[in-house]
Structures are given as structure tokens and as C-alpha cells.
Image (cartoon, rainbow, N blue to C red; front, side, top):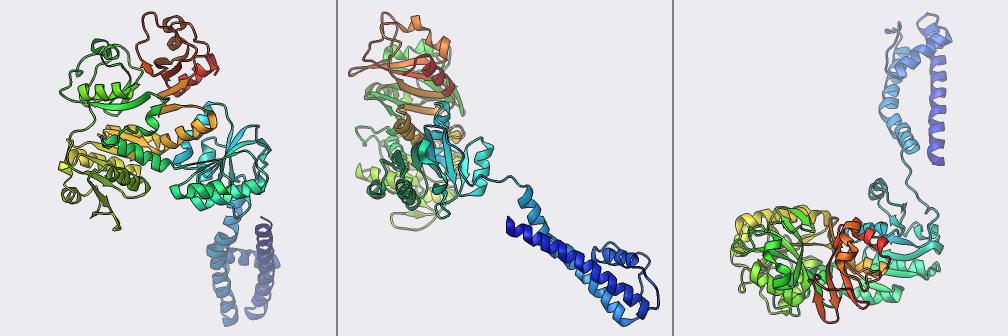
Length: 542
């Protein structure tokens, strides 16, 4: 800022000198070359009008060639000043002077702050979870535009990079944990720098490549996660029944409970019936905690909620009961033969292909760029590519592209081209899951959900599944519930949450009516909006 101010003062001084010298020369020239008297103020007025390109007053014609050349020179100097010097020097100075200054140094941090190096989809859900749990957080961001966006959201941000020593400007005394979310090489450098600065708290690294786990640990990380590969495993497990035991990925809670999505067949006996009429808890041992209908999520359904053909039910229960319910009343697969078509061969796509091939499934990979393992080069949104991949005969199409807009449009095209083929979609931002379901996807899971749940479990000790802000399933202890019946506690009336299941030993109980009482060793699963689950934790502290 000192250099910019000095240049501005130099510019102003030069302009004043130019005006004074030019006025004196014009005054002398008019007297000796044109034979006309001009006072210094009249000469100054003429020079000011000429340099600013606003006019010439009463002087507009000259006879002597020297004076004509002098005036022409002043005219070009004026144009040069207006169109070059002012934009280069004055405007940038004013912009720097008055623009919002991004914080370059970290403010005093609250005790227990979680420090996050670099923003992105992998930590967006974690930030929300930390805020809801009352845990302060601060981001280190090197991109100025991203930093402004985060500040607009109300996040605490410090702008800087490892190269300019941003970690040296942070007081680690109040930091509870550091989450490294940059590229793998940036993460390693950030971890080493933090340890060298004396930080002894927990460091968690989010990495892209599994073989970088050990180097991250050697650099000083306490835990290393690969959310993209976990997401790939969840998508592959959702597609193939040969991946057994079925890995639901982050959709598994506790030892026995799983939360799954089941699309209702058009010929299912559930279509048109209400939740009360179906008696699903008694017949199948599962609980319906929500239903997607045309992209809208009906969370915590009431007894009079009707099942819709094509609707996606969110079901909680034991693995066996969920699978039995899906086989009888819903649809998880359309075929048991044929190959899987995977669109996108990045980290997620490669993990999906690896797991499917390890399970002896046939695969076909579509990607825009040729490379090893890619059978079809082209765009999944091109019907000619879909025809070449024989999508109509596929068991399912797994969209592993890295752009949510492309995923959304690809889903629409696939459902128009081959409506009977299930679409399983990888999503980046959790808020786009609803849109992609609305487009027709049979299953959609976001990297934000995956990483947020993993990191929240690590940092906050929570085991949870967040479908979106309206629906979250959280594992809690029975503290405050022991020896009481659900009807006596009126949990939903007081907190907005419902108890959807209880894990007791090797059993998953969903029918909590009759003489059921909570035991001290039970694992309790509640369901509600993210705000409702927070109210439950306030009413029944863990």
C-alpha cells in the first residue's frame, strides 16, 4: 500500500508541474509568437481545458507553427492522461483504498477452534455440523474470490498460502484440531508446518490417493481419510449385489442398523396405501423415515402419508430386514445380468470399477478423454455414445462425473433414453442431491455428505447420516431415557425428533410400542431435521 500511495503522490505532483510549466510556456508563446497578451490565469485555464480534453475557451486558432505544434502536443498529452495514466494509477489506487480488505492475519481464536486448511465440498457439511454443535471453526483459504464467498456466508476466514507463511500468522493455542483439505502435497506441507510450529493437537487429512495415507501419517497426521474412495465404494455396493456383505458405506450406523433408499415399483402393493395401512414396522421390521416424491422430501412421515409409484423411500432397520423389504415392496435392481456402465473415470469412477471388477461384474467405462481402462471415449450426454455402450441392456448406469450440472443433465438424458435402467449418481454438493433425485436418479450420494459424516464422527464423536437439512439420523446414548417408555417421554413433541430404532445386543428394534422401555445398554437412533436433533441433544445431554 505504501508503494501505491507514493506513485499516486508522484502522479499528482507531476500533473501540477505539467500544468504550471505548460501555462508559463503558453503565456510566453502567445505574447512573442502571436502578439497577444495572456495572463497566467488565462494561460492556466487554457492548458487545463486542453489537458482534460474539455475544450479550448476563446483560443481555438493559432498562426505560428511553433505554437500550433505546442498545442497539438498538449492535446495528445491530455488524451494520454485521460485514457492511460488515470486507469493505470488512479483507479487501482481507489479500488485498493476502498475495497473490502480480506483478513491476512488470524484473529484471536476461541478455545476449541477447528482449523480447516482450504474449503471445498469435502468440508462444507463438516462446517455446518460444527456450527450446529457450537464448535468454532476457521478456514485458511488462498483464493481471494472463494474467501469473499465464505465471508459472505458468515464464516471466519484468514487469507493466505503456505508459501507466504499463513500458518505463522495463526496462534495455535486455542486450536483443537486441524483438518487438511488441500491437494495431497499441500496437505503434507501444511501438516509438517503445523507440527514444526509446535501444534500438538489432532490433525486429520482428507487425501485423494489412498497410497498417500502412510506419508501423511509420517508427516504428522493422526488420521487420514479418502472420502472419494468411500463414496465410490458406496456407489458400487449400491449397484451390485455381489458385494457381500453389502457395504452401504456411510449409510451404516452402529453395529446393525443401516439406512437405505428403496424406489417403489409401480406394481408394488404399497402404491396408494398409507403408512398406517401398510403396517411396515410389524410386517418387515423396518421404519420409513422419509419419502422422495418428484424431488421433494417428505421427512418424518405421518400415518396418513401415501406411498407413490416411483417414490424413493428412506428406510431404517437391520441389513436383513431392509433387504427383505426391498425385495418385496421396492426396487433396488432391474436386472441381474448385463454389465454396469460407469460414466467418468476419475478417482470415484476408478474405485467403482475396481470394486465391481473384483466382484466379477462386467463393466464398461465412458469418459471424454482416452486412457487405460476406458472402453468408450465420448460424452455420456450424447445418445450415440449411449447406443455404443448398449445402455439399454445395462444393469445400471453409475454417474461418477465431477460436475453436478453434468450429472443432473445426464440423469435426465438417461431416463429419457432408457427409463428402465437404474441411475446411481455421485454428487458433489449435498444441496444438489434433491435436484438429481427429481431428475430421476434411483440413488444419489454426495461427497459432502460422505466426508462430513466421517469428519464429524472423528471430531465430534457423532455417528449420523444426514440426508439433507430436513432429515438426519443420529446415534445417541439412552441417557435420560432409561426405564421409560417412548410414549411417556413425548420426545417428538418436545424436540421435533422421533426414535426410529433401538439397537439392543444383536437385535434392531423398530416396534417400540406396548410395554417397551429403554435400557441402559441400548443404542438409540433418533431422526429429525438437523435443528431438531440439536434440540434433542440439548434436552438429553450426551
